[in-house]
Length: 202
Image: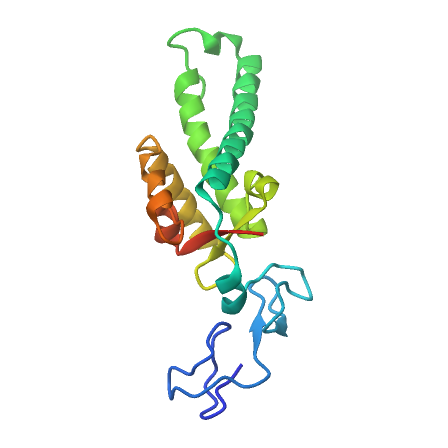
């Protein structure tokens, strides 16, 4: 969309021109970050590919996800990641049964080391990919919550990766950093603030 006064090309969420402070054109619209299609400003999903999108007005009326709901979603996600890592470890034991013996290594790692490294790597990939593609992990989908940027836009790959790394850094504090969500006005965790995201009800 363009400014009515000077014709400046505005971003998908800008209603006021940063160049001259003029208003956006009446035919305001947003461009889908997935397929590039232009959509009406009030559309909550792309007409072409179905990518979810919240504008600022819709975001303002959206309900924030509670700490309890987010915690339950994280527990479900933890089980999903644990099942994936457990399957990989079982496969390794099937290939090399003596790997389970104390001090034995496979690909340079003991079983304990493998579970730790695979857990972190799998968890980061899981969180990054699902939030970037669906806007939510399996746990969040089950609990009816989703991750969006603080301006209502869909979370991109880089922000999703940044959020996932921040999430696992928060886990390193034994989860104590997550208590900030309870005290924060927008229910944002440290990883949300780092990536510029927030979690809302669908």
